[in-house]
Image 1 (cartoon, rainbow, N blue to C red):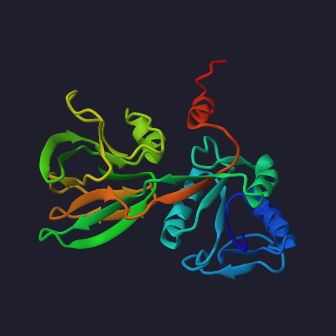
Image 2: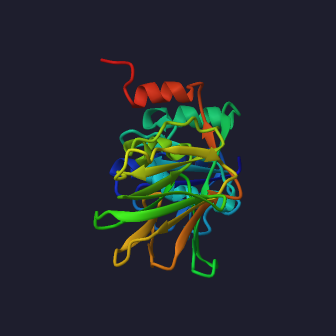
Length: 285
């Protein structure tokens, strides 16, 4: 690897210190190091600061230091520039970050020795359509797209899959998620956990006012459309809990798999099921 990009949660001192330590380790090995120009802390000489929208161009690897929120933000840029991601966990659960900070340097040594796995994962694309069907906004996400009323009020939701009407219901909203996002908001809403390599999308209603509306798994090549029927409500589209678009009553949301996959770098031999057992404490006391 000739160029490695680093992106950290700049609000956590331990992330900033770890970024500096990893940058020094990479520079000692004659690897070019790039970081976003808004990165905090004292950075070793020789590290190149670039605007966030271009610092990934031409990089061989992106190392993200933080929790799942930091990685979700970084994933959109990694997807755009086709750069694989390795996550270093400084958060709590850390489903998306593969290694802990204590393992950072040994894990990087394994990566440079070629001892790693590449795991492709689905990304979502959410399009906001006007009443003529023209796309007026479009954004990609790794975890999920959520349509809901921001103030906590219930809304009337209409859904269709592949152009076929599916369900109308009243509730707090709906989550459309990838397998990666199945352990995020969708899990809290009663959705299933799905192994990341499975090629499906999930639709999970948020607190529906009927027991008949249940979580649904559909083939990843299908499109899901969501329209809200309530009037006078402030309804929003949230992508990965970060990108927010306010919808008006003439608009609908179309969610489908993104054009490409994103690639995660995994070090070691832990399976997804071992991670689940550890993170969710399924092993008991």
